[in-house]
Image (cartoon, rainbow, N blue to C red; front, side, top):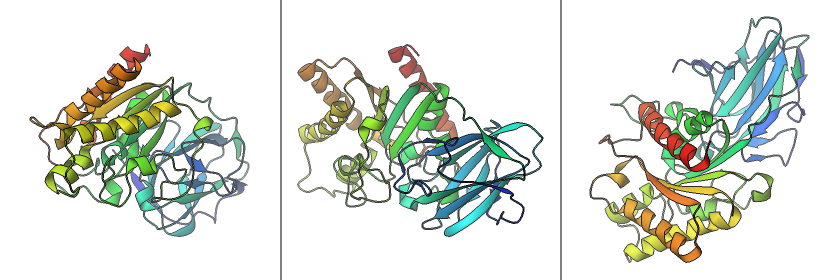
Amino acid sequence: MAALMLAGQACAWAGVAVQADDAQLQYTGRIDFADPARPMLSWPGTSIEANFTGASLAVRLDDQLGKNFFNVFIDGDLAHPVVIEAAKGSKSYAVATGLQPGAHRFLLTKRTEGEEGGTWFQGLELADGGKLLAPPPRKQRRIEFFGDSITTGMGNESPDDGPDDRLKDKNNFMSYSSITARALDAEAHITSQSGIGVMISWFPFTMPDFYDQLSAVGNNDTHWDFRSWTPDVVVINLFQNDRWLVDREKRLQPMPDDAQRVAAYRAFVQKIRALYPKAYIVCALGSMDAVQEGSKWPGYVRSAVDQIRAQSGDARIDTIVFPFTGFGGHPRVKQHQANAAQLTAFIRQKMGW
């Protein structure tokens, strides 16, 4: 995917300031509006969208750690993002110049995740005479994803034979989660964290500790209001890190037996069901080595779903497994696209979309 890296100051030429609390800005995702003039974006895939006039556009950001990356798409050109590498602190980033007269659209999306810290959005700068127009209509369908690095999109833009832990190569927009949401014309919330598990993670907190936070920056005491946004579909793709940490690393002692693994997964799914009694829940796994031939982990997911169905008569829940391709690293974009195609078809069938 073609990209232009920008990190320069843009204040010199911008003529019209747009504040972050402008009603014409459309925000999507778990965004912290404690200070409406400086909302904080932390979750992968969180976005800001607007229609505007004027020949130029700059974005003002205050990044916590200087590790975050953002896409900015102009006029619906999703194949050619301007990529912002956010510097630490408050800066203005030029993302479009020389635009033709008339209406234009921009979409800003967070490529990275809470692991890279939060970013305070401070508004826009338009050319002299520019203004915001009415925002695009909100999508009517909603999907929430709970997942780990696969759902985030870690390393998805890395070369196949290269390292997949570089921040510039993490792009949630091209993860299976965001690709699926676009294919289904759905608004998405991506509640994910690289390295997280259900029973154990590569750090001291797990998804059952993390799923209800407003801020994705570490384990914290912020609280997301689940009443404020209700998904039609929930996709849970977890257990890859559990597989590594339990079976390979032997980090849980005593080691949980099969029944305990199923019970842990079932308990988390039941938390989600209690929050969203009408949603269709898709319990996914893959496409890394937790689903390779001979792995027990897909069976744990299926058993948990079977138990939930049997105990509660829940018919709005199912499983899907993304096949293991034999690739040893994090899925690259082409694998995300294949997984998204499989998931999109599955959700279309179940939801009649």
